[in-house]
Amino acid sequence: MSDPRNAQPHDGPVFNAAVSHAQFAWNNETVTQNQQDNSAVAPGFEALAALVTDLLRQLPQSGLPDQDREHTESAARDVLATISGPDAPEAGRVRRALAALKGTLAPVATGVVAGTAVGAQEWARAAIEGLTGIV
Image 1 (cartoon, rainbow, N blue to C red):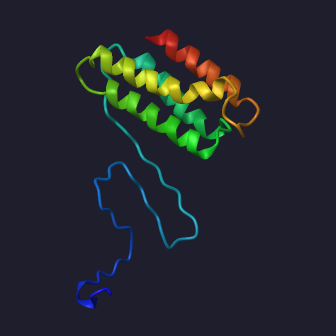
Image 2: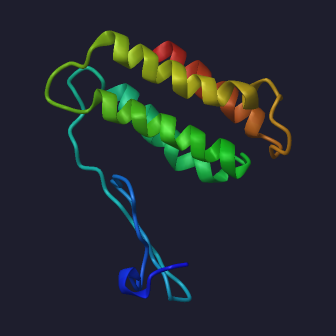
């Protein structure tokens, strides 16, 4: 039985772990949220950052199922985080981040993911080719 003396009323989200770069809205009918990441890209990685940023921009229209889209977005943001900063990032970290991003796109590109929209397979193939040729 719950002890009422320990009850904690909450009027919003409660987090029991670290949270970063999150945006929340509740108790409203419509909302528009934007987030900017103004971190600098390490010298020499500008083209990769542009490619991954473009991939993120196209991702909502890719036709990927929600879970696959979320995994791809997370992997793309990891690539951007890896190449951001004033110093050149460690080559191994960049390769691993790119491999993870290509790994999220591979099932879509090969047609393994069920429920993908027409065009998503070609879009994923083109993204993988671009990521492979850039580094």
